[in-house]
Length: 360
Image 1 (cartoon, one colour):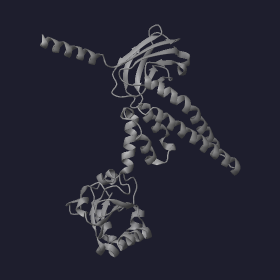
Image 2 (cartoon, rainbow, N blue to C red):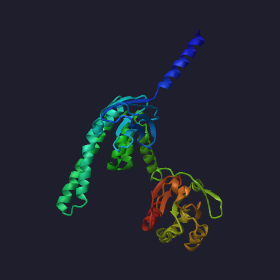
Image 3 (cartoon, rainbow, N blue to C red):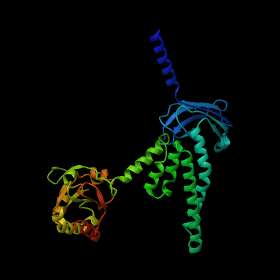
Image 4 (cartoon, rainbow, N blue to C red):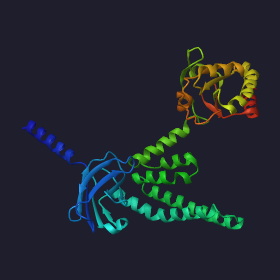
Protein backbone atom coordinates (compact mmCIF):
# COMPACT_ATOMS: atom_id res chain seq x y z
CA UNK A 1 0.00 0.00 0.00
CA UNK A 2 2.88 2.34 0.87
CA UNK A 3 4.43 1.76 -2.55
CA UNK A 4 1.15 2.62 -4.22
CA UNK A 5 0.99 5.89 -2.29
CA UNK A 6 4.53 6.80 -3.32
CA UNK A 7 3.75 6.07 -6.97
CA UNK A 8 0.54 8.11 -6.74
CA UNK A 9 2.46 11.04 -5.20
CA UNK A 10 5.05 10.93 -7.96
CA UNK A 11 2.31 10.91 -10.61
CA UNK A 12 0.59 13.90 -8.98
CA UNK A 13 3.91 15.78 -8.79
CA UNK A 14 4.64 15.03 -12.45
CA UNK A 15 1.15 16.18 -13.44
CA UNK A 16 1.56 19.44 -11.54
CA UNK A 17 4.94 20.06 -13.13
CA UNK A 18 3.45 19.44 -16.56
CA UNK A 19 0.81 22.09 -15.83
CA UNK A 20 3.39 24.74 -15.02
CA UNK A 21 3.69 27.52 -17.52
CA UNK A 22 1.93 30.70 -18.56
CA UNK A 23 -1.43 31.19 -20.18
CA UNK A 24 -2.58 34.37 -21.94
CA UNK A 25 -6.22 34.60 -22.96
CA UNK A 26 -7.16 37.50 -25.16
CA UNK A 27 -10.59 38.96 -25.85
CA UNK A 28 -10.10 41.83 -28.30
CA UNK A 29 -12.85 43.72 -30.08
CA UNK A 30 -12.60 44.86 -33.70
CA UNK A 31 -9.90 42.39 -34.68
CA UNK A 32 -10.34 40.26 -37.78
CA UNK A 33 -10.75 36.51 -37.32
CA UNK A 34 -7.81 34.62 -38.77
CA UNK A 35 -5.27 37.20 -37.62
CA UNK A 36 -2.12 35.47 -36.43
CA UNK A 37 -1.12 36.51 -32.92
CA UNK A 38 2.27 35.75 -31.37
CA UNK A 39 4.14 36.22 -28.09
CA UNK A 40 7.71 37.48 -28.38
CA UNK A 41 10.41 37.84 -25.74
CA UNK A 42 11.40 41.48 -25.55
CA UNK A 43 15.00 40.67 -24.64
CA UNK A 44 16.00 38.40 -27.51
CA UNK A 45 13.10 38.74 -29.97
CA UNK A 46 12.30 35.03 -29.95
CA UNK A 47 8.73 33.93 -30.61
CA UNK A 48 7.44 31.80 -27.74
CA UNK A 49 3.85 31.02 -28.69
CA UNK A 50 1.35 31.66 -31.49
CA UNK A 51 -2.38 31.36 -32.08
CA UNK A 52 -5.02 32.44 -34.58
CA UNK A 53 -7.76 34.88 -33.57
CA UNK A 54 -11.28 33.47 -33.66
CA UNK A 55 -14.19 35.79 -32.96
CA UNK A 56 -11.88 38.21 -31.17
CA UNK A 57 -10.37 35.55 -28.94
CA UNK A 58 -7.00 33.86 -28.76
CA UNK A 59 -4.89 31.91 -26.29
CA UNK A 60 -1.13 31.77 -25.94
CA UNK A 61 0.45 29.07 -23.79
CA UNK A 62 3.98 27.94 -23.02
CA UNK A 63 6.83 28.24 -20.57
CA UNK A 64 9.28 31.04 -19.85
CA UNK A 65 12.48 30.64 -17.88
CA UNK A 66 12.38 33.95 -16.03
CA UNK A 67 10.41 37.17 -15.55
CA UNK A 68 10.78 39.60 -18.42
CA UNK A 69 8.99 42.03 -20.71
CA UNK A 70 7.10 40.32 -23.53
CA UNK A 71 5.14 41.58 -26.52
CA UNK A 72 1.86 40.25 -27.85
CA UNK A 73 1.98 41.11 -31.53
CA UNK A 74 -0.28 40.67 -34.54
CA UNK A 75 1.09 39.69 -37.94
CA UNK A 76 0.71 42.56 -40.40
CA UNK A 77 0.42 45.23 -37.68
CA UNK A 78 3.19 47.29 -36.08
CA UNK A 79 1.51 48.03 -32.75
CA UNK A 80 1.86 45.43 -30.02
CA UNK A 81 0.87 44.90 -26.40
CA UNK A 82 3.77 44.79 -23.97
CA UNK A 83 3.50 43.13 -20.57
CA UNK A 84 5.72 42.01 -17.72
CA UNK A 85 5.15 38.41 -16.73
CA UNK A 86 6.75 35.20 -15.52
CA UNK A 87 5.98 31.50 -15.63
CA UNK A 88 2.77 30.26 -13.98
CA UNK A 89 0.94 33.52 -14.71
CA UNK A 90 -2.63 33.13 -15.95
CA UNK A 91 -3.20 36.39 -17.80
CA UNK A 92 -6.24 37.89 -19.48
CA UNK A 93 -6.15 40.73 -21.99
CA UNK A 94 -9.30 42.66 -22.85
CA UNK A 95 -9.77 45.72 -24.99
CA UNK A 96 -10.22 47.21 -28.44
CA UNK A 97 -7.86 46.48 -31.33
CA UNK A 98 -8.21 50.12 -32.37
CA UNK A 99 -6.74 51.22 -29.02
CA UNK A 100 -4.23 48.58 -27.96
CA UNK A 101 -2.44 50.97 -25.61
CA UNK A 102 -5.53 50.97 -23.39
CA UNK A 103 -6.09 47.21 -23.10
CA UNK A 104 -6.68 45.81 -19.62
CA UNK A 105 -4.20 43.15 -18.50
CA UNK A 106 -4.91 41.03 -15.43
CA UNK A 107 -3.31 38.00 -13.79
CA UNK A 108 0.29 39.12 -13.27
CA UNK A 109 1.34 40.93 -10.11
CA UNK A 110 4.54 42.15 -11.71
CA UNK A 111 2.54 43.47 -14.67
CA UNK A 112 0.72 45.76 -12.24
CA UNK A 113 4.10 46.90 -10.90
CA UNK A 114 5.16 47.56 -14.49
CA UNK A 115 2.00 49.57 -15.20
CA UNK A 116 2.43 51.61 -12.02
CA UNK A 117 6.00 52.48 -12.98
CA UNK A 118 5.09 53.45 -16.55
CA UNK A 119 2.26 55.67 -15.31
CA UNK A 120 4.66 57.65 -13.11
CA UNK A 121 7.77 57.47 -15.31
CA UNK A 122 6.52 58.01 -18.87
CA UNK A 123 5.23 61.60 -18.39
CA UNK A 124 8.54 62.59 -16.76
CA UNK A 125 10.51 60.84 -19.51
CA UNK A 126 8.55 62.74 -22.15
CA UNK A 127 9.27 66.00 -20.33
CA UNK A 128 12.99 65.22 -20.21
CA UNK A 129 13.05 64.46 -23.94
CA UNK A 130 11.23 67.71 -24.75
CA UNK A 131 13.67 69.69 -22.61
CA UNK A 132 16.68 68.10 -24.32
CA UNK A 133 15.23 69.01 -27.72
CA UNK A 134 14.82 72.60 -26.52
CA UNK A 135 18.21 72.90 -24.81
CA UNK A 136 20.39 71.72 -27.70
CA UNK A 137 19.45 74.43 -30.24
CA UNK A 138 18.98 77.21 -27.67
CA UNK A 139 21.53 80.03 -28.15
CA UNK A 140 20.34 82.54 -25.56
CA UNK A 141 22.25 81.80 -22.34
CA UNK A 142 19.58 82.87 -19.81
CA UNK A 143 16.95 80.80 -21.61
CA UNK A 144 19.36 77.87 -21.90
CA UNK A 145 20.20 78.05 -18.19
CA UNK A 146 16.50 78.06 -17.36
CA UNK A 147 15.88 74.98 -19.49
CA UNK A 148 18.84 73.18 -17.90
CA UNK A 149 17.47 73.91 -14.43
CA UNK A 150 14.11 72.52 -15.51
CA UNK A 151 15.86 69.42 -16.87
CA UNK A 152 17.78 68.85 -13.62
CA UNK A 153 14.59 69.32 -11.58
CA UNK A 154 12.72 66.76 -13.71
CA UNK A 155 15.69 64.39 -13.61
CA UNK A 156 15.67 64.59 -9.81
CA UNK A 157 11.96 63.74 -9.83
CA UNK A 158 12.62 60.69 -12.01
CA UNK A 159 15.33 59.44 -9.66
CA UNK A 160 13.20 60.16 -6.58
CA UNK A 161 10.18 58.33 -8.04
CA UNK A 162 12.35 55.37 -9.03
CA UNK A 163 13.88 55.25 -5.55
CA UNK A 164 10.45 55.21 -3.93
CA UNK A 165 9.30 52.53 -6.37
CA UNK A 166 12.23 50.15 -5.87
CA UNK A 167 12.15 50.51 -2.09
CA UNK A 168 8.42 49.83 -1.97
CA UNK A 169 8.81 46.79 -4.28
CA UNK A 170 12.11 45.29 -3.18
CA UNK A 171 10.98 41.77 -4.17
CA UNK A 172 9.64 42.65 -7.64
CA UNK A 173 11.72 41.88 -10.78
CA UNK A 174 10.32 45.12 -12.17
CA UNK A 175 12.59 46.96 -9.72
CA UNK A 176 15.64 45.60 -11.56
CA UNK A 177 14.10 46.87 -14.79
CA UNK A 178 13.54 50.29 -13.19
CA UNK A 179 17.19 50.53 -12.10
CA UNK A 180 18.25 49.55 -15.61
CA UNK A 181 16.08 52.29 -17.13
CA UNK A 182 17.28 55.10 -14.84
CA UNK A 183 20.91 53.98 -14.54
CA UNK A 184 22.12 56.67 -17.02
CA UNK A 185 20.67 59.30 -14.66
CA UNK A 186 22.44 57.97 -11.55
CA UNK A 187 25.88 58.84 -10.21
CA UNK A 188 27.82 56.03 -11.84
CA UNK A 189 27.77 52.29 -11.37
CA UNK A 190 28.67 52.57 -7.68
CA UNK A 191 25.32 54.30 -7.16
CA UNK A 192 23.57 51.65 -9.27
CA UNK A 193 25.20 48.88 -7.24
CA UNK A 194 24.22 50.45 -3.91
CA UNK A 195 20.60 50.62 -5.02
CA UNK A 196 20.65 47.13 -6.55
CA UNK A 197 22.00 45.69 -3.31
CA UNK A 198 18.90 46.87 -1.43
CA UNK A 199 16.69 44.58 -3.54
CA UNK A 200 15.68 41.14 -2.34
CA UNK A 201 16.81 38.00 -4.20
CA UNK A 202 13.34 37.59 -5.78
CA UNK A 203 13.85 40.90 -7.59
CA UNK A 204 17.26 39.93 -8.94
CA UNK A 205 15.89 37.68 -11.67
CA UNK A 206 15.59 38.16 -15.41
CA UNK A 207 17.55 39.82 -18.20
CA UNK A 208 17.57 43.30 -16.64
CA UNK A 209 19.08 41.97 -13.41
CA UNK A 210 21.76 40.18 -15.44
CA UNK A 211 22.59 43.34 -17.38
CA UNK A 212 22.95 45.30 -14.15
CA UNK A 213 25.12 42.64 -12.55
CA UNK A 214 27.37 42.42 -15.59
CA UNK A 215 27.75 46.20 -15.72
CA UNK A 216 28.60 46.33 -12.02
CA UNK A 217 31.10 43.47 -12.35
CA UNK A 218 32.71 44.98 -15.46
CA UNK A 219 33.12 48.34 -13.72
CA UNK A 220 35.17 46.68 -10.99
CA UNK A 221 37.63 45.10 -13.41
CA UNK A 222 40.81 47.13 -13.21
CA UNK A 223 39.34 49.56 -10.68
CA UNK A 224 41.73 51.20 -8.24
CA UNK A 225 41.59 49.35 -4.92
CA UNK A 226 40.74 45.96 -6.45
CA UNK A 227 43.06 43.00 -6.83
CA UNK A 228 44.50 42.60 -10.31
CA UNK A 229 43.27 39.57 -12.23
CA UNK A 230 46.04 37.13 -13.01
CA UNK A 231 46.82 36.24 -16.62
CA UNK A 232 49.46 34.37 -18.59
CA UNK A 233 50.68 35.31 -22.05
CA UNK A 234 53.78 34.51 -24.10
CA UNK A 235 56.76 36.85 -24.27
CA UNK A 236 58.87 37.71 -27.33
CA UNK A 237 60.60 34.32 -27.13
CA UNK A 238 57.36 32.37 -26.80
CA UNK A 239 57.81 31.76 -23.07
CA UNK A 240 54.64 31.99 -20.90
CA UNK A 241 54.73 34.88 -18.42
CA UNK A 242 52.13 35.31 -15.66
CA UNK A 243 51.25 38.48 -13.83
CA UNK A 244 51.52 36.59 -10.54
CA UNK A 245 55.22 36.08 -11.22
CA UNK A 246 55.66 39.79 -10.47
CA UNK A 247 54.21 39.52 -6.95
CA UNK A 248 56.44 41.34 -4.48
CA UNK A 249 57.17 44.18 -6.93
CA UNK A 250 55.48 47.36 -8.04
CA UNK A 251 54.61 46.70 -11.66
CA UNK A 252 53.19 48.98 -14.32
CA UNK A 253 51.05 46.86 -16.66
CA UNK A 254 51.27 48.88 -19.86
CA UNK A 255 48.93 48.30 -22.82
CA UNK A 256 50.39 49.62 -26.08
CA UNK A 257 51.14 48.74 -29.73
CA UNK A 258 53.72 49.61 -32.36
CA UNK A 259 51.00 51.18 -34.55
CA UNK A 260 49.67 53.41 -31.73
CA UNK A 261 51.04 56.95 -32.14
CA UNK A 262 50.13 58.20 -28.63
CA UNK A 263 51.66 55.01 -27.17
CA UNK A 264 54.96 55.60 -28.96
CA UNK A 265 54.95 59.24 -27.83
CA UNK A 266 54.44 58.13 -24.23
CA UNK A 267 57.13 55.43 -24.35
CA UNK A 268 60.03 57.80 -23.50
CA UNK A 269 58.23 58.71 -20.26
CA UNK A 270 57.81 55.04 -19.37
CA UNK A 271 61.47 54.39 -20.21
CA UNK A 272 62.55 57.29 -17.97
CA UNK A 273 60.39 56.00 -15.10
CA UNK A 274 61.74 52.46 -15.53
CA UNK A 275 65.36 53.62 -15.50
CA UNK A 276 64.77 55.90 -12.52
CA UNK A 277 62.90 53.43 -10.28
CA UNK A 278 63.90 49.91 -11.41
CA UNK A 279 66.35 49.69 -8.50
CA UNK A 280 63.49 50.48 -6.09
CA UNK A 281 61.41 47.34 -6.62
CA UNK A 282 59.65 48.68 -9.71
CA UNK A 283 59.28 47.18 -13.18
CA UNK A 284 57.06 47.33 -16.27
CA UNK A 285 55.13 44.58 -18.05
CA UNK A 286 54.19 45.51 -21.61
CA UNK A 287 51.04 44.08 -23.20
CA UNK A 288 51.10 44.65 -26.95
CA UNK A 289 47.97 44.86 -29.09
CA UNK A 290 50.04 44.28 -32.22
CA UNK A 291 49.18 41.84 -34.98
CA UNK A 292 52.62 41.72 -36.61
CA UNK A 293 55.38 40.10 -34.56
CA UNK A 294 58.08 41.88 -36.60
CA UNK A 295 56.54 45.32 -36.01
CA UNK A 296 56.17 44.54 -32.31
CA UNK A 297 59.81 43.46 -31.89
CA UNK A 298 61.15 46.37 -33.97
CA UNK A 299 59.20 48.91 -31.89
CA UNK A 300 60.54 47.40 -28.65
CA UNK A 301 64.09 47.75 -29.93
CA UNK A 302 63.66 51.20 -31.44
CA UNK A 303 62.01 52.67 -28.34
CA UNK A 304 64.49 50.87 -26.02
CA UNK A 305 61.76 49.18 -23.96
CA UNK A 306 64.02 46.93 -21.90
CA UNK A 307 61.40 45.25 -19.74
CA UNK A 308 59.27 42.12 -20.16
CA UNK A 309 56.82 42.15 -23.08
CA UNK A 310 53.97 39.76 -23.89
CA UNK A 311 51.36 39.53 -26.63
CA UNK A 312 49.12 37.05 -28.44
CA UNK A 313 49.18 39.27 -31.56
CA UNK A 314 45.39 39.50 -31.73
CA UNK A 315 45.00 43.30 -31.93
CA UNK A 316 42.06 44.41 -29.73
CA UNK A 317 41.08 40.75 -29.38
CA UNK A 318 44.14 40.35 -27.18
CA UNK A 319 42.95 38.11 -24.33
CA UNK A 320 44.49 40.25 -21.60
CA UNK A 321 43.01 43.43 -23.10
CA UNK A 322 39.59 41.75 -23.19
CA UNK A 323 40.04 40.52 -19.63
CA UNK A 324 40.69 44.08 -18.44
CA UNK A 325 38.05 45.66 -20.72
CA UNK A 326 40.66 47.73 -22.59
CA UNK A 327 38.94 49.57 -25.43
CA UNK A 328 41.63 52.16 -26.21
CA UNK A 329 45.36 52.55 -25.77
CA UNK A 330 47.64 53.69 -24.26
CA UNK A 331 46.32 52.36 -20.97
CA UNK A 332 48.05 51.14 -17.83
CA UNK A 333 47.58 49.87 -14.29
CA UNK A 334 50.03 50.33 -11.42
CA UNK A 335 49.98 47.28 -9.17
CA UNK A 336 51.54 47.07 -5.70
CA UNK A 337 53.55 44.10 -4.34
CA UNK A 338 50.39 42.43 -2.99
CA UNK A 339 48.73 42.48 -6.41
CA UNK A 340 46.38 45.38 -5.72
CA UNK A 341 45.74 48.07 -8.35
CA UNK A 342 46.74 51.39 -6.79
CA UNK A 343 46.56 53.71 -9.83
CA UNK A 344 45.69 53.62 -13.51
CA UNK A 345 46.32 55.50 -16.73
CA UNK A 346 49.36 57.37 -15.42
CA UNK A 347 51.08 59.57 -18.00
CA UNK A 348 54.25 61.67 -18.12
CA UNK A 349 54.84 63.77 -15.01
CA UNK A 350 51.95 62.10 -13.19
CA UNK A 351 53.61 58.70 -13.61
CA UNK A 352 56.92 60.02 -12.27
CA UNK A 353 55.31 61.87 -9.36
CA UNK A 354 53.20 58.87 -8.35
CA UNK A 355 56.22 56.58 -8.32
CA UNK A 356 58.27 59.18 -6.46
CA UNK A 357 55.65 59.34 -3.70
CA UNK A 358 55.44 55.55 -3.43
CA UNK A 359 59.06 54.56 -3.89
CA UNK A 360 60.72 56.97 -1.51
